[in-house]
Length: 70
Image (tube, rainbow, N blue to C red; front, top):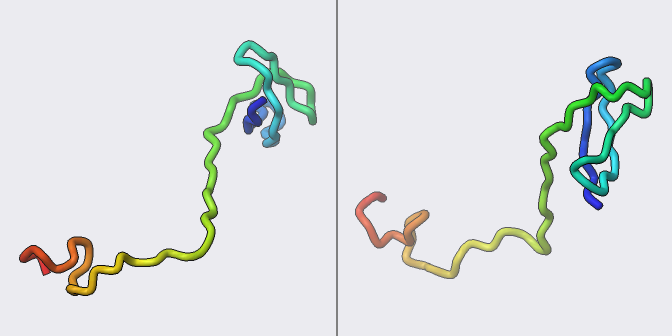
């Protein structure tokens, strides 16, 4: 089940809710109003290690120095 973020239009509180399907009615846990809107959820990704630039040693930035942009 996905977790969605909502904002209540009545009391303006933000909350999260597990929603099993698109037709599920969602009510604010603070004021019980069904006048809620789903917020755009943003997420981040964490990767193991740190950024390692490529092994090209010819200088230059994005293209490795092979063009005349540098």
